[in-house]
Image (tube, rainbow, N blue to C red; front, side, top):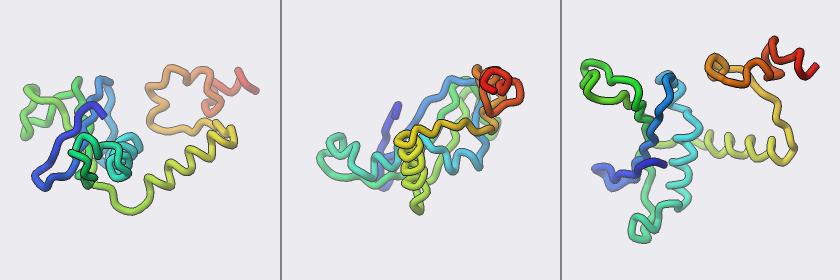
Length: 137
């Protein structure tokens, strides 16, 4: 968490600054794991001390893309692009964490492909990629 704000309802709103050149899509932001884990941490008490010993309700989170301009209707080049995630609903983030913990405990580190592959520095040696298979096969 780079910044935590209190929204108009007294909820904790998490802000994460990004300096990369690429940004997730709107749909990806809705289930962005990092933002969701931050909101889960708020829900589980990570910020209680900051909020005077009270447990704040998570009010959402956002990515602020510092190297990308906001759309013209939102300020254009004068402001960075902001991508918001609504407050968590359901238990998908808990399931995500349980799956990640299971992989670590089972030592299952099988790579998976996705949009992130286009900018990954390890693509040439990744077993999930055709060009990386020759290194590990």
